[in-house]
Amino acid sequence: MAEIDSSQIKFPAYMVYCVFIACLGSFSNGWVIGSPNVPGEITHHCLNGNAHVQNSLFPDCLPMDDALWGFAVASFCVGGLLGGLSGGMIQTRLGRKRTIMLNNLGFIFGGILIATAVNSSMFVVGRVLCGLSCGIASLTVPTYIGEISTIPSRGAMGTCNQFFIVIGILLSSVIGLPLATVSLWRVNYVIIAAPAIIQFFLMNTCVESPRYLVSINRIEEAKAILQKLRGKASIDVEFYDILEGSLGTAIAQLMIKQYGLSDTLKKDQEADINEELIVIPPQASETMNVIQVFMDPVIRRIALTVIGLHAFQQLVGINAVMYYSTTIFNLAFDQETSKYMTIITTAVNFVMTILAVVLVDRMGRRPLLLVANMGACLFCILLVIGYVYNIPALLVVSVFTYVASFAIGIGPIPWLITSELTPTYASSSVGSLGTCVNWSVNFLIGQCFPVIFAHIAGYSFVIFAVFAALSFLFTLFFLPETKGRSLESIVRGYERYRN
Image 1 (spheres, rainbow, N blue to C red):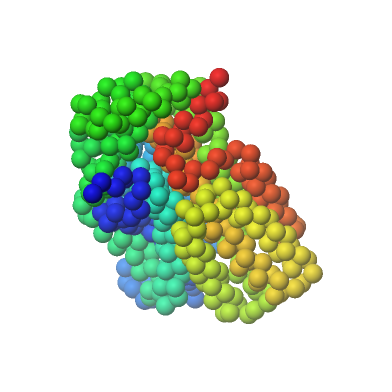
Image 2: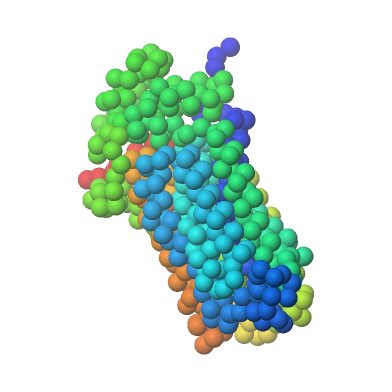
């Protein structure tokens, strides 16, 4: 019986295990985002002021006005930006596996610092530390997942990154309800250390990315690890593609016999050879820096596509809608009910992200993203209509359906597509650029939206509708479909931009 080729298998058990462990970092990311939502009021406003009533060591709360609290919560974006800037260099030097392991230190120490904070400065420093780990995780986890996943499962596995972020946000809100008391709010922030500690130890049972190992010339080890990830499937074709994508066609051809690949593979490659599709990396086994990325016409095109997708992910206004959902719900419900409606909004995000995991490898990335952008544009407009004409039911439905549109495509796909479009030798620099833009725009929206909302209220969402429409056009004209294609073949498709 002939061996099954690795390009035809979906979910080998060990690969799924490695993806799951890597995604614990994404869960931590989600917990950092969601943890201040429910117990936030008791954290910075309390009846006892800065007194030590419940505990002799720590004050009952950390008194902050709304402006300072807003900055304290958003300060993790500053850490995210710094993490995005440094994450590419770190994952190139240490590897994907070790970077994910050591990145947990920021979550652990940041969570402890917030939980033991005696003033607002300690809280902010803790948030920045957690944000630093969020930034690195948002770059390294999708890269690792993209590089170890099989072609048929890469979409579903890549979407798991966003899925675990949403789980973190949802659980932080649900668990935060009973912890939103003077005596327990600190526990809500230190919980982040638990998944971080678990991941720190369990990542030792996972393997390094084979593509990364090839990029640092550890070829034999890369081949053995790829075989471990693929179980009993034949890896000859996939391993050749990795060699060709990282080292170039000429060197990959020479290595076929050296590394025990099938002789028929060489004949097949020689028969299919096309001068326009010959892969010649800038310098084999050397990593591109940011300047080199923009000097190379192929990688520049890829980088601009990645940057655009990450910018639009934030510009469509998801964080503004999520942060102000309680304010919107207050138009239709009392304050207590609005708090639960906000949690339902997070649950909608969770359910639709599950649907994205199912659909991304069936529909493809491009169609799913186009549908999501159309939905975001439409429901932002309906939200404005509901706000202007004071139609509470339309407001509620618009928020739910807008969040659903985001979750099914705009949320997960930019992170997934970054690792799919970018060759290994440029992935760190391009990934850093995309991550930095994402966190920068995230912070910008967080700071600007309250001012805009104060001046034009519900009309604010017209801006997001326009950006969703622009995101639709950007996706339509610049994003190729990556479903069912190897990372190397996707990059080869960009070679026409070299001349």
